[in-house]
Image (cartoon, one colour):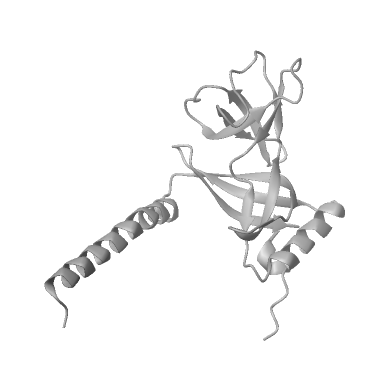
Length: 190
């Protein structure tokens, strides 16, 4: 039998647990149920790092990853992010339409980190916030090998990213030769 103080603690624990679940469930619902989004394709180059906290994942660099601007931006690498506006290019892949140090009204945009390799240039390299594709820990080595071989053989590797009007994004899938990565992985032996 529970004492009154223990039953109060138990109820408080249940309320805290429920409150901790509310935010992730709301975000998942927001992304999965939203109908107002735009999907862009990006060419990718990638590598497979290992992180003790996150496990194995495919880290990639989305292309295009640089843009020339007319005037110098007021951004500092990792301190003050900039905004990137995308448009669809002639080949069906995303292209950078605009790069700014202030929020860009309208269109498909994302907050990113531009930085310049040299001070005299007005060409900025961009690190996008969508640069990780998580796979099952057991499939990560095989997935990395499949993608690495595709990139080395100059076979098309691309990532599909959903952009929402508020600047949020979600990676839909990683594709090689037009097929999702999971179709290239061998089924595990049981």
